[in-house]
Length: 270
Image 1 (tube, rainbow, N blue to C red):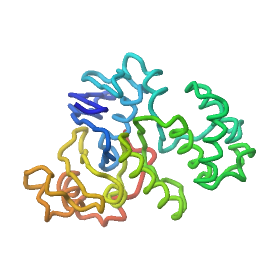
Image 2 (image 1 turned 60 degrees about the vertical axis):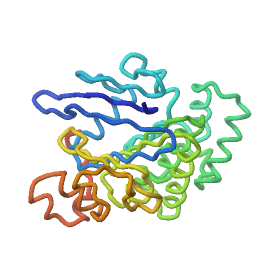
Image 3 (image 1 turned 30 degrees about the horizontal axis):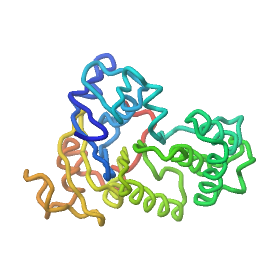
Image 4 (image 1 turned 180 degrees about the vertical axis):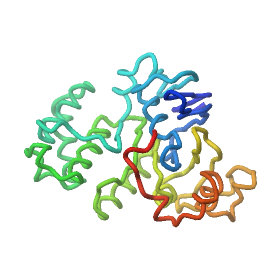
């Protein structure tokens, strides 16, 4: 079951158990939110899904491929937007997107059309011939979004989808992700931002201490659906924020303001 399936996934770094028996699945038609604080195991799980690291144990299937056995095939078939990824500094957006299209066996005319489409959609047409090293972080993020979708994959995995984007582009990306998933695809979104999860996700898995501790099914407006789990944390009258705070840590963490919870530390343990 599921176009993405993770069963009993474990990964440690020395004495730190970053992922501890993770279980979840993602179906076609879903924007699945992987929601948790820094250090919860989100990045490690995403790296395992994309074949960038080998787990200690457990099984993973993405589009019927095993990224631990055939990582290049998995990455060829999916779209990936890493949070801190950036395109090669010595290439222009056009050169990089042409390279990505070639790696994914697209015809040159198809690649050219899709480059034009994404450059217009995300507003970087005027930067197509500019080296990435001379682009802002926001413009580079637009290119990274374009490369993830240029081959129209069935599965897209995104780490913090709205990072570095201006408000107008954020709205465009949110609407696009929702529509893309609805077209029989799957979008996996790793985030610590509760607002983002509520706005775009159809289902949310809350992660803490390397485990998926609870799930919530959401409507298109971000409200809990009546089809959510029946445990006490999934009651339809409990806001997602309260469920998140209940599961992510100790009393000190729960007493933090939302703005503090939404901060990001690039040096946090994955």
